[in-house]
Image 1 (tube, rainbow over the protein chains, first blue to last red):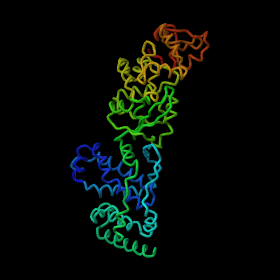
Image 2: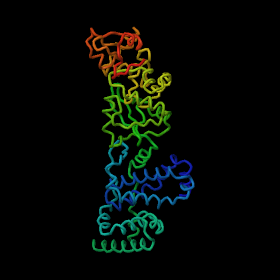
Image 3: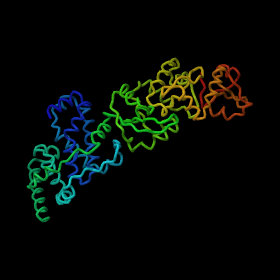
Image 4: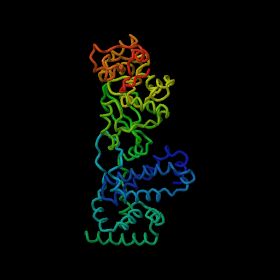
Length: 171
Length: 252
C-alpha cells in the first residue's frame, strides 16, 4: 500500500486503476454483505471510487502519501451508504457496455448470509463485515466507522455471537 | 468450519465492468456510443463534463481521439441524466440541454463555438459574421481555425459556417461533401448558396418591408420572390435605404 500511495501521489490518473484493482473486490463484497443488494453494492463501490478520485485530486502530495488507504476508502463508502437513498436519483452513473450480458456473479452462500446478517443491528453488521469479510484491523474500523475501538470490539463480539446462535438454529 | 473462516470466504471477484465504470466516472477514460446522423453513423464521445467529441464511426476514431485528447476510450452508455438529449441535439444540430465539454479548446474558441451553436437549422453565417458576433471582428482567421478545431461537429453546427465570400468551404467531419450533404438535409440548398456566392451576392432585401437579410434567413426566404432584391454588400443595401434584419443580424 505504501507503494500505491506513492504512485497515487505522483501520477494519480495512471495509478488510480491499480487502487481499483487492489481494493475493488473487497470493497464491493464488503458493501454487498452490508446492503444485501448486488446492484446497490455495485453503485456504491463505483461512487466510492469516484469520490475517492476527486478527493485525491484535491489533496497535496504529502497528504496522499500519508493516507491509510483502506480505512480512508471505507470512511467514504460508509458515508455514501448512509446517504445513498438521497443521492441515488441525481447521480449520473456510467455503465460500460459489454459484448454479452453477464449475470451478477453472486456467491453460493450469499442468500444464506443475507438472512443471517439481517439479525444484526447496523453497527454490528458493519463491524463484523469490515473485520472478518474485508479484513480490516480494529483501529482501521474505528477510524472508518467513527466509533471508539472498544465499541467496535464489542460490536464484533456481540455480532459474531448472534451469528453463531442464528446458524445453530438453522441446523 | 468456524464462522470467521466462512466470513472471510465471502469475498469473490470484482464485478464485471467495475474498473471501466470507475474509469468513466472519474473521467480517466471517456465513453463512446454509436448514433445515426445525416452523414452516416457517428460516435458520440462523453465524460462526466458532457459530450467531448463527435466523430465518424469509421476505423480511425479511436486513434484520432487518443492523438488529440490523450485519454482512453471505452464503449459505454452515456450517463442516464442526459442520454435522452443526444438524439435531439443531433437532429437539431445544436446542444439544447445536452452538456458539452469544451475543455479541449481555448476560452476564445469556446466563445466562438457558443455563438456558432446559435445559428438556426437550415441557415448559414460566415466566418466574419461569427467574428463580429464574438466582438472580435478582426479575428476571422481564428474563427476559421476554431471551426476546424470544433470537437463536437453536428452538435455545434460548424457546417452552418461558410466562407466570408459565401462559398460553402471546408469541413472537418469527413470533408466538404458532408457539409454540403448536411446543408442539403437541413433545407439550406447548397446549390443556391454556391450560385449566390458565384454572383457575389451577400445579402438580400425585401423591397416591400425595406429589410435586408442573409440569403438563408427565414424572413427573406418567406418573402414574395418578386420583392427580393440582391446586394453585394451590407453597405450597398444600407445605401439603398434598407435596414438590417433583427433575426439574422447581417453585419458584413
